Image (tube, each protein chain N blue to C red):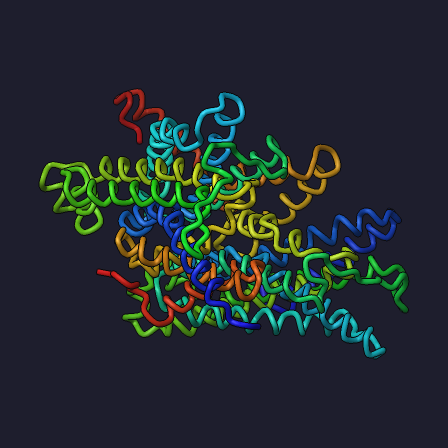
Length: 291
Length: 337
């Protein structure tokens, strides 16, 4: 194969853009798995749920999918808090989160997927918005707006989350709950309440991530499964709960995936994230920016 | 009960079931029964790692598919070169070895870390293996592979009955292995890992080695269960072979049955497996998967020890407890926990 510089640069740029989107997809898991230590493998299912809600809003009311997702965020927050409450009472309190807690989330993932299949079928759904379709041509670069827009909003969301976690009282309490629950309790803060809020926020990000997903590609219920490997690979590589690390890892994975699909064919791309995951676990389990 | 006696009893039960099925003379029973028995093996195999050691494997479909696709690869090789086709037990052995090796490798890379990493890696394994199979034209790629099943086989006659018999023997082998583990040093080692890995490590239990043994053994059994599958189904397709239903079923069956002993996965698989066979015929296959998902979530929340646990508490309940509870409740309303 003749190595083409044009192709290479375009692949890198689209990898960075896709990586920005991956950051949004992963930031929720960085919060739940990285900080709270809740292995929420059902996160991709909530993202797909977000995609379908954005699709319904777009198809019936003609609302912009991202706007619809932002409006839906409080609903996802409540859903997340409710799920954490069940999780806490049934598993964390009894000390059974490792086996039965995981099975619980797996069950949620499965139920969501099968319900969506029963209701919407396995047809691909897509949304319509002014920025889907056109693209910018800068020199030899070709930047599709349908990827650029989610990427920018995603980076904005991740930055807002980072500022919230490091600057606000609540955010600092969330970071503290990961380190020492007892100390937090001595400061007269209820760690369970903090965790419930944090988990709610983590699920709320899935609403927006779902809208990004359906803007970037057509969605059917089992698409989420491809994201499980990606999400956790990025989360681990980024250093478990470090949002700047998540963004760097997301872009790295985006670039490598994009290069793989440009030079070897898109059907190989899903294997990349798994390679990343195994490599990180074998070489540096603490991740790039791990504490 | 001694192991030879245990095996003998199960072989007798199997013979009785086989005789009854032959007496009914309906091939559907063999088709449905094969799937139920396959789930007995998958559930038992999952439980060796999940129930005994406490490590969750979400990649049952991947290990199962490894067995199935090794059979397809061998079938292709044999038909291309016009060799004599290998018998099912040999295919099972090969599928088991391939699957076991992958299980060992996965475990070696991830089991030294926290349990969650292993679970996530197994979840991703299914996606990656599916990618490999889709890109591998020799075993059919994304189009799938056809296998022509022989109509008859010498001593037994109908081929589906032969497959049923093979799977039944594998199921007996699987529950015997599970029971052997339970009452051995290995089983106590597993239990110590499940209850407190740090304490086990500190007391000199070689935790990594035991975990690797469990992962490999579990992988071998899942691969063996998958090996005859192409011959059963006739047409193997990546998206259905790697489907979530195998993963969810092999987790749901032990968790619903009970994870602490070999009886749990057996009960869970027989119950859920038969229920699904009935529901697939009477309602629809998507709805029956939904039922399994809901049962899984409800059981892990309400009955953490499964059906076996429920029966256990029911048997240990003493009548005076009830009298005592009532008396306390009468004296101090609302104080009974």
